[in-house]
Amino acid sequence: MVKMREEDILKAFAEHLKNLRKEYGFTQESLADKANLDLSHIAKIETCKRNPRLSTLVQISLAMNIPLSQLTDIDYQSILKSKMSK
Image (cartoon, rainbow, N blue to C red):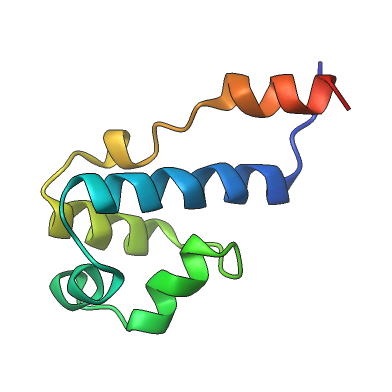
């Protein structure tokens, strides 16, 4: 079994969040406002400088009006494939 590093998971989540945010028409600022979070908090999550708490993920999913499961639906297979090819 390949062990995934926290950095790999955070990177995949950051990319997923950024893609969803853009798909749903949010800027970092508008998402932060609607989720009642600081703009820098969203920016740090999207640049892998912050590991969000579950409560933050719930706030973001509610702000985007999507299920938490959609927000956390990261493509783990691509993470594993990139680790295997190294």
